Length: 252
Ligand code: BTN
Image 1: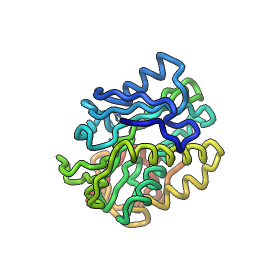
Image 2: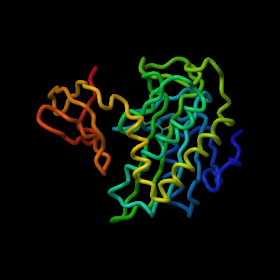
Image 3: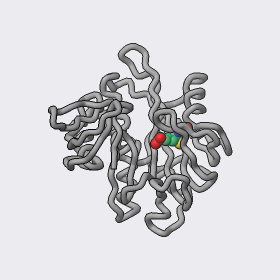
Image 4: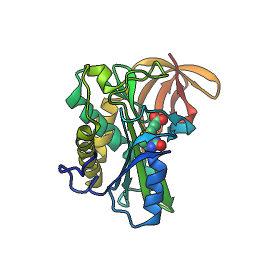
């Protein structure tokens, strides 16, 4: 039974639980459009049957073992060209939470995979509804692997696999939501530089030489940083190039 978090100002104060649904992001979007849903409304399910991942992928989560939830945000203080900061906020919040829970190394793989000991523990899907230069609604969807032990992908992990412990989803949810609120308030206060610096400080494979592919070509490069729009800047033999989410793949 999920409870309204006692540790937040507004995040999760309106909580919508459904035992099963195709996607909490889709449901949250419907709720945000149908009614004047409050900012911070949290939509959560125990069994997400058609979870949406990045780039049209599917997010799979064993029922009742993990957290699958979405938050309705209204970041009208944020310029559209800085919308990537919403990804930064959620990534850093999940890293904050994990730092409290595990001693394994934690990295953020651009744009928004959270890796523990090199494996993906959490995925984030942020869907923004824009109107001109304004972000009307932002749906921040989070899939967090808590207790699942077996995954179809060998690149996935869970908190339980990292620590050997079991976690009650209803106990962990308020802690995570509290961290998301803190980071969101940091963004609302305009601390862009600090947020970016901390994101870059946690960036997977930064400042190391690795292979990448783009448009069918393989190349070596060194991840330097992000541009203001959140594009990945990689130093190559031909100089520094910026890549959008679908434009570059990590190899090796
Ligand atoms: C990824 O591909 O890494 C992003 C996965 C995001 C999954 C979460 S689970 C809750 C929310 N509802 C969805 O349909 N997707 C997101």
